[in-house]
Length: 606
Image (cartoon, rainbow, N blue to C red; front, side, top):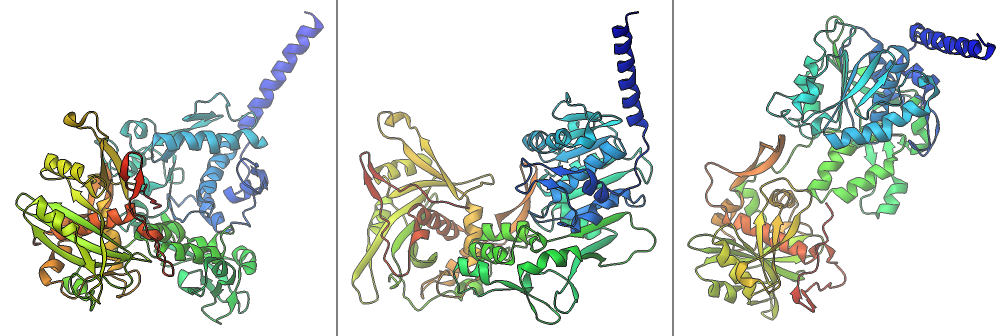
């Protein structure tokens, strides 16, 4: 046998032996956090601060990750905000398993697109760029089935029962579980289906990690957090008196009268013990000395443990940024919900679930019916079309999303409606001041008749319909092509996010009379208030998800002026009402164009 051939065979045999030895090398006796500190490297593609992973920067993740190494713990619940490194904790657990204790993993994400993005853009890059995985991770793996020596990481789609029922695995990581549908296809909860995959594995080997930003108290993560054997909070020491305490939003202090820039630089955290002013410079040391403290006790060893954080703990978020985000969000219900969920890590509790007649009537001002308040800068209207009547409403709008009902009623004919909407309403001195710039007309009843009417008053009378499904924004347009109007410009129909507007109206009814409030004129009666309070918020299954939506109360009277209020609000947004200023009158009329009068494009930013 030629020497060169013999050498090649010996080299090949040596490589096989080396690979075999790597497979059978006993795992080091280290925890997940210790493994990450020793072997995980963060590349410039993963972070703006590339370099070795350091748990000391995010010490609150240490105990959460190390639960993997505690045989008695089977379920780990992490109720988290954004920007605290929760996803990286999941990656570290996967990396530890591949390198130290190879086994099968099921990683469940809300949908197919998120699965692919996470596999390609996050996890595979870690497995390719960290030396500890060399010779262990198979780089020719498929995107949704990553193979390595001794096991695989299979990605599961929470919306697909088939993707969750295929494999028996000892370890499951379920990420962003509040975005999961209530059911996987026609089968049961994706959480239950996933958990079924582990039942053949003995205690000590079976591990389930549940990570998510919360939504509502009925959401998956909050329900798991509440039912856990032991719940923990992360406490840090005051740099002045040493008192250990959780970081809570109520202790963030700032002057709300300052502008956003000043707030970002002047905000501080007040120690609940000594009252010391804690600034961001102290936070790294406080975090490093922090500790998880159980909030309750249980006999024996807990099987289900839960951890809860907010963004105040994040080393990448300052106290001032939190305060600034709150100031940007506090007057918009959807933005405020995002702040509560994604920054405070708390479930959203709607304060507008039920509206009360007396509360609505308390928002009557001294301004009589039909009179324009001195702060008003534009008028809009809403029309709810019924079989026998046209219910209508006219609203005044001013800076800071301030509004007041100018007039409301019902009429029989379109000609009557024209006369109402063409009225120039006076101010308190009797001087003619403003008329309706545009008004929305509901297309739910007498649809073709409404289209004909809106064609005759194009871009003044705006056809609208409420959305039957959850929407991301406040409204979206579509063109209505009508057979008898082939050569004419198509009519534009606006689909309205009615739930979003009802949320905002309910929210503004919590604001006292004045700037930013939703107000009535002095002559609004009880019948009007009863229609405004005709609905309440209930949980409903839409598209496989549990969402809060407004529904008519079973005992309620009609809700026509409630609908008119929504339509009028939507048209005000189309006319850029949110840009109105206090000091300078900002006229936002319908603008002329070559194709006729057009409503300016909406400036929605939810």
